[in-house]
Image 1 (spheres, rainbow, N blue to C red):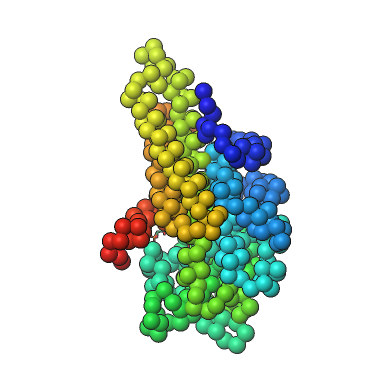
Image 2: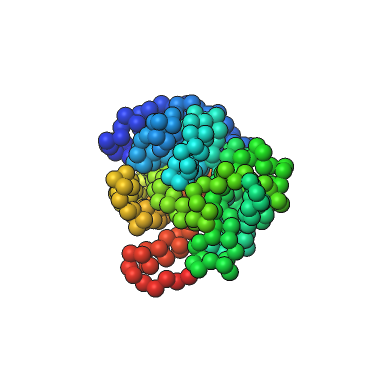
Length: 388
Ligand SMILES: Cc1cc2nc3c(=O)[nH]c(=O)nc-3n(C[C@H](O)[C@H](O)[C@H](O)COP(=O)(O)OP(=O)(O)OC[C@H]3O[C@@H](n4cnc5c(N)ncnc54)[C@H](O)[C@@H]3O)c2cc1C
């Protein structure tokens, strides 16, 4: 019977990732989860092998691969039982700098990001009072000579404690003074080594998954004007430009999770004997697993469709959003089927199901909630009136 997933044209890349991920087994990830730690050894190994620099062009020290390959890297981490959420920011956050940074900024930062000397793991967009309604964000950056003074607050900003750099979205022109609410915001590269304790305070948020995420407070944080990325006032557009890659990569992580759950469930269903037969002989046990497999396969097609369009430089907003929606749904349903198949043992840490169950649930909410994907589809693909 075929392996899950079935071999594809990325097999060589998959084999390389499996060799690396295979050295970080379930015990490793369980221990990191139990300690609420950071998978430092894993992220370092991944960085040393160059995988996290997949999307950085070769001229800056990366491997210049496409989104399809990058997505396979993310998928393989989750498929191996790991959690790419600990480091996926490093893969795509640099896209803002790459697409919109000046030649000087790229030469200054990208080689160090590619080598792993500097981590750009964090992106600060979400705020406590405005949530998904990003254009209403309250954090301001006001230019004073050769620097900007940043004031405000962010929430759910991930991996700050394991990053040297952070992308920040702040308002540089008051909302009342712009013609379109999406204008007047700007993107900055914040050097966390200089910022934390000097106008920037970080407060960790204990949460359901082992995901390092934080509240952030800015009190006259000084950011050098040379760290403004692109043009002042265009920042919201720059952030949007990066979302298709982000959504597609997250979709791939979900698909990795789905394969992991499906494989775990089918093995257990074949081995566990109750009423003198494997539980997997019962259709009531088979069907949810089979259904998850069907849904994961469909999500996978949409994910590679999004990758192909993106890598060809074609518009892929619809496909990236739909891939994220389908994959997050498929992984969550696979998680549910896997937990149910394991009965009581699904709740035991030892089986690892409950950890992955918690981890994959996040992707219904972040980095974009399912409702907002559906709003995108309704408005942009179906021509329905904008709902917000
Ligand atoms: C673990 C974790 C890590 C995160 N990491 C980061 C990060 O690194 N950087 C960052 O900037 N953000 C991060 N986020 C934030 C994440 O992107 C937001 O939580 C998410 O976008 C939803 O925003 P919100 O929590 O403010 O929910 P809200 O905007 O308050 O929405 C709450 C609910 O209402 C629904 N809703 C709201 N408005 C509408 C509408 N018009 N129509 C239909 N439904 C609607 C939403 O879909 C959601 O289900 C993270 C979040 C979590 C939980």
